[in-house]
Image (cartoon, rainbow, N blue to C red; front, top):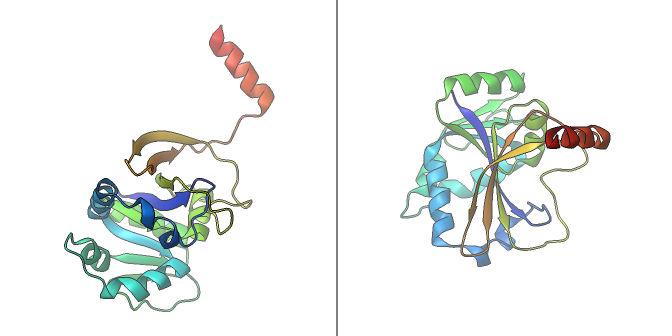
Amino acid sequence: MGRVVLSVFTSVDGVIENPHEWTFPFISPEAMTVGLDQIRAADALLLGRVTYDGFAAAWPSMTDEAGYADRMNSLPKYVVTTTLDRGEWNNTTVIREDPAQRIAQLKKEIEGDILIFGSAALVRWLLREQLIDELRLVTYPVVIGKGARLFDESVDTRVLRLTGSQAFSSGVVALTYEPTGEGLMDPAAARRAATASAD
């Protein structure tokens, strides 16, 4: 069974907008290896309309010796949108109706990771629908101060379980989380639970 996996570059203050403007100084061979392993483990891409349009305009003309671009271009792509009839990028399927049901079905049909890059609005919706299995937040040691953030006030409080971490020599840290499906306990309940566990 496949897993829906988010991979996103984020600043320390949670900004994900225009990462090409602030990630470049921190590129390292180890981070590039992790990125290559990640795309090789994916069996499909799941994208929102804005991210899809940006990728579709850029990736088809890209090449690299490691084969990253070839993998991006050859993977099946699913774009969740109500404003696009068909995708021009290779192997694109448009999901217009019943996206929750369609994505749940994709998870049954696909064996490997269904990888999401960016696509903040889609990610927020997927979290509400409990369809994301893993979040990989690649955190860069920079404060941007302004710009779009992955999570905003529309996101309910969520508890995540840390399942992995990797620090790179550049100062970048990759944090891997799984949603627990739980919200935060209210303070009184948290105190009672802490007291009970100490007894």
